[in-house]
Image (tube, rainbow, N blue to C red; front, side):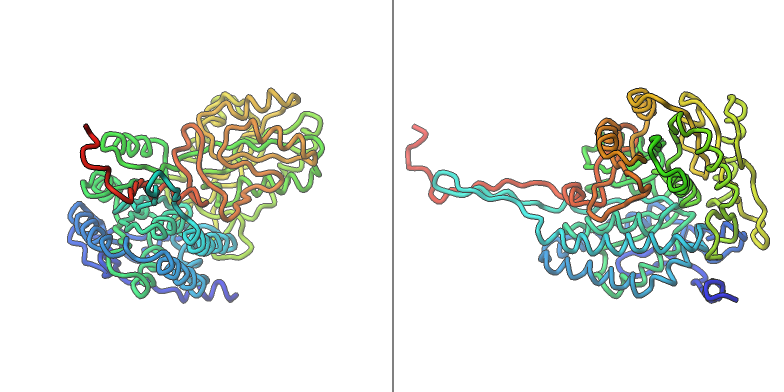
Length: 496
């Protein structure tokens, strides 16, 4: 038995996790939801099925905590964020395995999540120290512009990368003096709830609250609560539009990180072996369950045949297997619903005339028969097909030829989303000219998923509003207040 398998067997969970409200786990009167291992079907624990009453108590706790937390110094808040980062580092191995068991993602890639999360807390612990307003002299006085926290922030996160999402939301909100009520996804709440146990010993009561449950119950109650002051959501475009509408009607600040259908453009001057590996990584990582997946691949006509031959062969060698096996590179999707959704898109692609080059099947993995393990799948398609336009959230790509730069840029942009894009070329001029014309919030040249600490993350078009991950996120959680100080009142009778 290898050390990873041993760790998986040693992981234990509470029989039930209540909602984490005001520094304590509270019993949930409305019941509990099974937390199921998506690979094996095993019920690992139960999480609270939060409702409006739970949200009310969490928002109230956050509101009380805000009165004190918002007055802490930036140095104090910075120290708190470093303590959270330290706790994540100390518990990283166990938390990685919890996410592996809870989401079905390969264990080998989860250290990346926690490195990003740890760096987020450390980055904002530092960024808040230099996040300053302005001051300037005015006639007989001084103008001061300061950045005030918003208040109680409602945050809703998806199931694909739990700890990345937790850090994206919590770190800037805490740094700027806000308090939080967060609803994790019902399919992946265990690592967040285990984090709550760590936060219990770090943060004052009520500063961070977690209410688990379904979106139509706990989520709806949270976004419509009258005592929240900010909405932040990562998830589907459809739900994002509803949240955006709510924010608009209530005039609440909102951050939305929604879907993507990212282009990955391959120029003819690349090292083909390296480019094939990068493209494979760009659509297989996270089991393809990523909003920034490199899902539309544009390959130059001059290298198309050789490139595609090698890309197809590489897909056949990607190991599809047990999530806890360190050699696995693609494992199970999050649940049956998502599995059937991906298989449905594969069938749709065939029906609309896309040519299946490799994959397209559900794989049975011994001792993991419950899971939806989907082979890396490549279609030759056109950009106007639904398979090329709609987000699939699985290890599936469409590939298209190109031979004119202006045309490929037009096609790359000819989609409703604009979250990320990839470019591969040895020509820096081509890379930068293309990057500047792509409608995407993040453009990665020669290395897909090149997340750099401090780089603002967010989308163009239907991919959302606002930015996270970089210092711009501090602006999303504050509002500017101008204070004009006159040293002396005007003279008597000045109004005349």
